Amino acid sequence: MIYQEEDYRAVNAREGKALFIPGKTDEQMKSEYEQREAKANTPLTVELTMTNREADRLCDALDEVLYTYKRAATLFDFMYEALASGYFGADHPGILALCEVSGKAFSAAAEGDGDFVERMNRDFKLEVIAKQREQEQAA
Image (cartoon, rainbow, N blue to C red; front, side, top):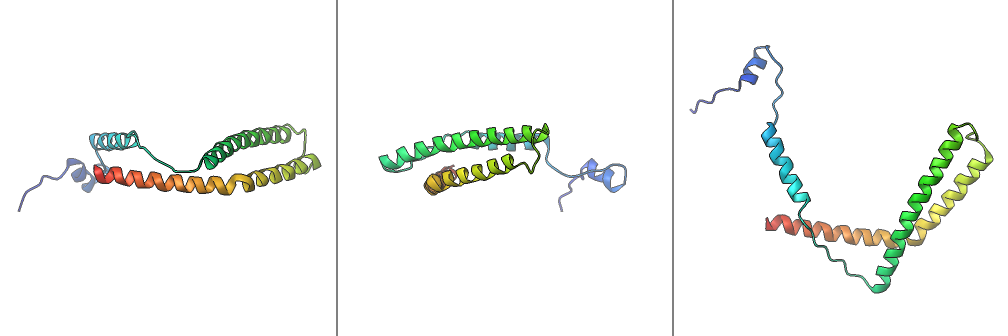
């Protein structure tokens, strides 16, 4: 039988002299962090095949997504300021109409290019996952 000296922290905890929660050392945590960072910073070449029409549509759709996010942020900021300052009440017809019209506009934007962007996003994610698995197997 191999004698292994018990960690002094575990002995003190068992004797009620200290509280010891086993875990990883600083060196182990640093090593794991460095490994994760090295993996995260490894270049990944991803190839996504699409037609020129699809590429143009994707570029336009992504521009529209960015514009829509910015407009939504501006709208919600305006509504917050109007409600927080007491200028409008939550039941003011202008706020309700603004929410209704905005909801319809966002729905129309999502229906317009939403399915296409979703399909491109899915294809891209699948390609990224496949390439990451290739990298892991090669390592």
